[in-house]
Image (tube, rainbow, N blue to C red):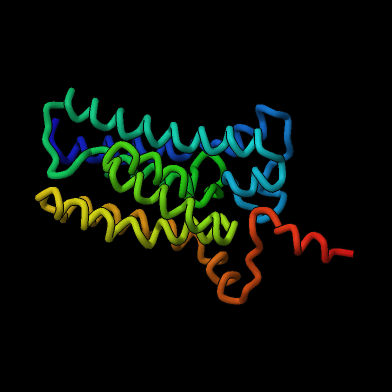
Length: 218
């Protein structure tokens, strides 16, 4: 198979897997109303957690991670079977379109999630060191602010410089890895544009209100 046809196949595979929206499938599995009618209207882990609780949130997060992991593994297997070579890890390309499909799923009227969990699933396989560093940063930000959107935006901002730094430290040509990381970051930031506006106006609430703010409620 030529590199061109392989690229097309990986794009279609990634977009198809990405369009399988875990939040909406969990709603159907558990007999819940469409999550897009509630809360922020987003079909992602955070809104599921807020509206339907920990079980629904955990199932959604797991599904989003697993589809990204499956896409990376499938992309590598297909590339190996095709006997073609690409100048980058095929998991990056397939993972990028998992993200596109997750945000704009063809199976669910192009209304999906914001892409953070799929990105983490891809990074976990293609660059585990960057994944660990992002996880540490996420834990610190969440511990300080308890705001998932801020955690997501911070991870998106950090993924490109961390990818570049790790490649340089390992003596690897950073061009393709850094380019894909930048594309991941841009898509996640674009999908969080409303959250960014709320953060700028101090209207973005934490995942769980702190005890002091609860005590002040009438």
